[in-house]
Length: 203
Image (cartoon, rainbow, N blue to C red; front, top):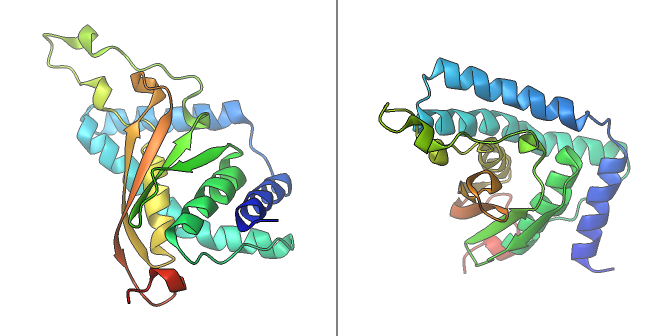
């Protein structure tokens, strides 16, 4: 079995062995969080996007430990990542599968960046953003700028910090804004050699 297949198999095994949360309840709970943040920040869309990313980061810094703990308890081996492709595969096939139970694909891979594609997003199953045209002439918020699921970007950034990768994440395509797929772009800004895979180290 290839390493990529092993990664995918580990993700499915972890998902099968952890407690599940009702999808509808999960989505509604997240929607309540969005509503609270909209109220707290007076519909300031850029600030709301920033706050969602920060919340995600706080979650992400704990995700690696959670993943390793669950894999050890269930006797599931997580392959060590030696390069960015394998890191992206672990995020997509293990991280998203274990924590959300969804399929995630990797694309646009370079030596310093990659994209993650979500065909399904449990956070937005009941969501339809208001049309910005409804607020024309009232100085209302530009809802097209709201990154409703920006919490994912923070989670990824926080998790990768724990394995010595400093990254920037951005939600570049979103089905809520009319795109065909959800795309998260991950750009590596700095690699801390200690603890990184062998192919990360510069010659």
